[in-house]
Length: 629
Image (cartoon, helix red, strand yellow):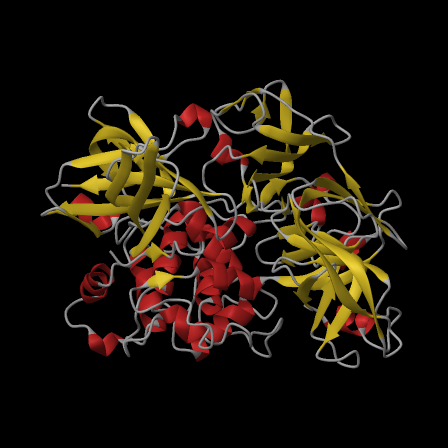
């Protein structure tokens, strides 16, 4: 079918507050409504109500048709002459009816009237939409509307439309008809939406509509939330749909210094609260015209001209100053903010300690002891720190204030309990909506973990290294110790050579050598004094740093009946579902060799499937390797 939505940008779609797109027709009603709202073709009343069950008049449909035409931005508020005897200049739809007449989209009745308040039939609406696509009455033979209705069905314009050709259309029918129009090729072979937005290529060659790019084009801003920020919106904020940090929210959840974007036609506000506080280390390419800024060792693109001015040599900041960057939806600098009076808190793990040179702001440099912190937000930051006792691997809290940065070592704060099935609680503690979690192991660079990954996991012993609570008593930061297993690599041991023999002179000769495959690369691991009692087959390559292998482990076997490519789960021969790793590795075993493959390929073939997991799901494990035979 033609009406599909791109799925490759789901992370960004969540940022926009969008639901995943359907891959079959008809499109979901909410998706169709969102697209037409972004295009300002169909919008609700002051409360956002689309009244989809109500029938639609000829005047209303004509307005939508003009809004879906290339003249949509040229319609004025008034007209000099009335377009029809029954559409006076004072009629609210007169400008749209006049535009439709000029475009050749509408005709009056036998008496020369337009009948603006009359309900429109499907056949009438289809005729107008086909004219938008470049078809004329001369393109159809026979009695109207037989040819038009046949073309309507041939173009798949009927998906989701339920009324018959002579029946009055509802606004829901119009919703689907105009959505279908957007992903339909015109008489010249160009998708209609690409005619309306020729520079954006919103519908690709496969007929897939890129909702993310469309809504980006409808989005305005940013502004920074401060006193009376709602006055900056071109609509009443009280009626807006609100998202904050990718989640549905309320108007009251927006805080001062949030960065805001909005869409008037969608009556939607998106708020983002990410900030970065630290020492302003560099401006690039120059202080006179900066396009990026480095703060606490991390470089950010500058998103707005106002932020560029504030950071330039014309503004009020200079290299070496403490600054707070307010970050927009793309992670760029939208504005400069005030540092929190109590200081900004960052929790994380030190991954590097070194001496680095810094610009002193006077065309000279100085050297300072510097720590790099892998923070719970998934980013790495760099701070000058004179405390010589801090080492790599230390848990730290970073407090960034107006004029200084404090890096303090943290003692372990253990916590045990089970994460509930929807990833919102750990034991008796609620996980904050914006909880930050990382998983760590030895000197490996920590990885960001989201609550859904921990759903159902029982955290025991020392699996939690540290946790912090917000003012509501919710867990706001969580540092784990190798809970997910996602820090390690997974592959196949292809050859085992273990030696454990007694020597004539006494003692033993003990050694081991293992050949294994990870990502299609043949690698070696072994010891001159130890054997690991391994066998050929799927394995975990346990990493104690980003480059060093600590040791190999064989994985545990589970017979599988089937695998869901899209759902990230497998069904065992015991009829139970088992979660797959997002990076599950697939091999086909053929004639004594393991050949790299993919889920899509092995699920299409006639294979016996075996899954191999590192530990139980309740301990954070997943099926890491699938072997097809």
